[in-house]
Length: 279
Length: 272
Image 1 (tube, one colour):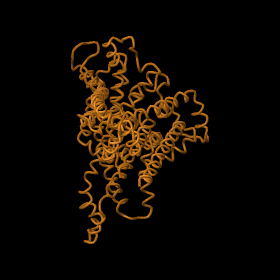
Image 2 (cartoon, rainbow over the protein chains, first blue to last red):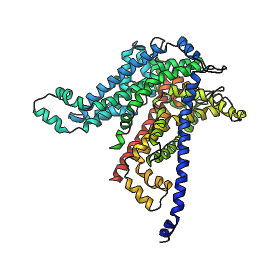
Image 3 (spheres, each protein chain N blue to C red):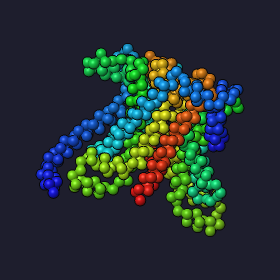
Image 4 (cartoon, each protein chain N blue to C red):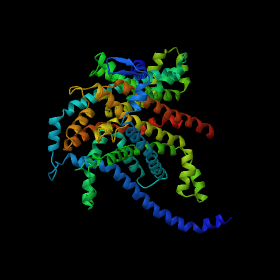
């Protein structure tokens, strides 16, 4: 009873407090944004400044390209990232279609096992993986490393595509079956065009994961000829512990492809990440 | 998939019970777990490092939660803030580590900033001393995942019914009260998801960050179980011990992921 009277009595005060907190909130958000951005602004500045000298110069960039074949490394990264993205999309969509729309014995167990691989940390199996690859001489091979990345990421691909295909109405397939189409034809003519957005999401996600990966690339693509941009950059960073300028310049360059893809596909990626919980 | 994941998983399990140098292995039972790892002189330090990182995560997620709430309730420039916070998600751990090293090194940004505001006496080699080095890793890690968690929590809040807030506001509920009594319980699954993703990342995915920032040092001050696994295998050639460490990390991850699955299922029941 008294609550009602206080509520009305307090209202103007509450209003003013609210307005004040608006300003505080905005200031806090700005502060957080600054904390987020500061290290990268520092990287940008440091890339154009030589330590111990004032003013800006491109000396770091000259040093960078002298000590690291960054263009070549980035091509390596791109080959692995694009290859793995395609591999994962193919496996994810084929398996996802089967899991979502076909009935076959053991499908539930297989689905559980495929998606369950997401929970296995790469670090837990990387050592046997490495020893196996070195025994059969597959270290430094693009196809085998792409296969590895594809296997590590296909749990994600299968999960995402299965969820997506389950959302497509069964009647679509049934009516095509009645018309006498085969499953292969249905997949190519009906499912594929409809699921392009989902495939793009999976592909982009895997591209970024592989582009940014370090551990697998470090172990499986050793040697200056096959090393990726991440590995080249990290090696450079550990060699030049005093003068980080060239490393800063290098990290700017290698970041660009990932960031550009992110900015373009941000909406898809967030949807993909939370797809499992939102249903 | 079977040969690339199933086979090595089985091998990891088997070799974790052997003394393995990559070529030959002798069966030693559980002694990798009980003797080599449990009695390792540095294991206490390493596990403590892991715990320190893990204990920081709830605070990081809480910050993300508050930010997500503020952005959700609508604020001037919300979309821009959201994009800015999400930005580090696009960077690799290598680049994040390099940026952090640039800021925290002796001639780096933080000391420069301290010098400008007249606190140069506080300046130090942040990554060169055990305590500040670990703190540096903890802060960098939480900083890097802040945006991703914010976006996950925002996606959760987007599923809420707006009218609840109007009703709560009429009842005189403040923002703190709304966060605690409405948003938190109704987005529990998303909070759990954010927690689990972050915990798993902290346990198994920051090898590159540590490699670039400190290489586990000074000493073992920033070595985590994950980094220790790599060292045991590729610096010491103790593949068996490293396989055992892998199995330990796998078990922890499965327990954490299982918790997420169960709590998700439970929440669904109570909501329907």
